[in-house]
Amino acid sequence: MDLSAAGSAAPDSRSRWQKWIDRLRQVKGLAAKLALAGTAVWMFLTVKALLALTGVDQIGLQVEAVADRTGAIELATQFFDQHWVLLLKCLAPALLMALLVSRGRALVLPVALLCGWLFLWWLGEDLSRNLERAFHDPLGMEASPVAYFIKLGLMGFLIMSVPLLMGLYFQSTLLDRYLVRCFAVPFLLCVGGIAGIMITMDLLNNANDFVDAKFGFSKILLFYLALLPQILVTITEAALLLATLYALGRMSRYNELISMMSAGRSVARIIAPVLIFGAWCFFAVMALNYQLAPEADRTKEEMLKDSGSRANAKGVEFNVPYRNREDRRNWLIFRLPYDLSDRNSMTEVWLMQQDAQGNPQSMIVAKRAAWNPTTRSWTFYQAAVMDFVPGDLKLQSLHYEERWPIMESWRETPGSILSDRLNPEYLGVPELLAYLRTNASLPERSLAKYESALHWRFALPFRCFLLILLAAPLGIVSSRRGLLGGVSTAVSLFIAVFFLSAVVLKAGEGLYLPPAVGAWLINGVFLVIGLVVLWMRSNNRPLPGWNPLKWFRRPAVA
Image (cartoon, rainbow, N blue to C red):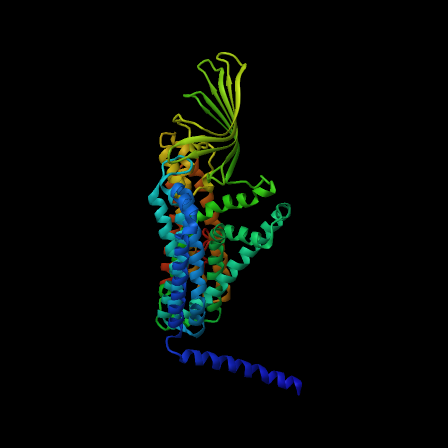
């Protein structure tokens, strides 16, 4: 009796939940009313906070903000962070209600509002941190503001494309929706599974560093969230290939694709939703690979720096020597990061000024050095300044300075000091363009690897669309034997694309090929192969055999 009562209680509770949702749906404009109420509350709290900042008791803060531009920017950023997150909290009931009571196309609007809030929040954060860098490169190279604003556009497309994809899904036909569902589930499982394996392996490698640095769960979570763009760029190709082969192979096994073709749909029309998703993945991976993924390793190193581990330091150069022959200055910098800032500066800097005969004139040993890209000037902190007797090695004077600015206009910049040590793998498109513009006078062989890396930032995402173009026709078969052949052929093509792209890219870096050709050649070749395979499958022509031993086999004599 107890079991039967418990069994009957479950449907009753489910029916009560459904009745409660139905009652909420009957209230017209409930989500809109909650959104207006939340917006009004947010505006009231924001105006109240602004009036508090302009009050008499905040005179000292106002004077500091006027006197110090950096402090004013930090204050505005902090205010933006607090109240933009407050807006989400105020609108959370309306969004939850909209997601709860909405079905089908009605979900597009609340998702679009949520994505719009997320993009504006990210845009404000990025502008506050990087807008000044877009016009004044922190390494002293020629900045590229256009490249920075292109990054903002790509990220805006990536975030706002989610409701766009939802709208396309609800506008599509029933067969297209079925194909998308068959493809999306294995794709998400592949992405989650491969990402989980990569994170687990990295966690095992860095476990000791986390323990030494006393990382908590929240900081470890932030650590891997920072690495997420790089992980997604790495695994998206394999996930697309496996999901395409699984989805189309499963539909072929149950003769669902045959039924679609019998109904009059062409092969190109059947796989059109998958190709559209591949094109979206191309733009999404390009948005991540534009700058966020190259910066992921630098973020990883910065979060691990407290552990004292330098084995995985990829965004920092250690023990950097530099000699300015024209001005006879010798530099030795213990730590010089790519992403220079007040919080991430050069440390343990040794500088020696020599005379025409090579004798030392003066020496600066500083704990920290900063370079101002706006005024293009150097400042040394906690520095010991030594002057030598002219023509002799004897010390003439020694004094210590907490802050020692250089009034002269030196031609050295952090970018010139790092010119031959910057790793292009960890530079985004704006940084690569700045490096190529600044060092245009260098030999072509010295710039080849940076030009190759620039083209590879766009060639790598294109492989997402390319692999779907290759795998989709091969996944459509009419027998189990053909399914195995198509899967093996698609996997072989994936290995060939991966291997040959790496080989030809290195040829471009070595200037055996033009850098643009080295980055795009293999993509172009396999694009032609994919179009040919799609054309042959659309016209029901047999694909050529991939076994070279059968190419020279003579036909049997009757």
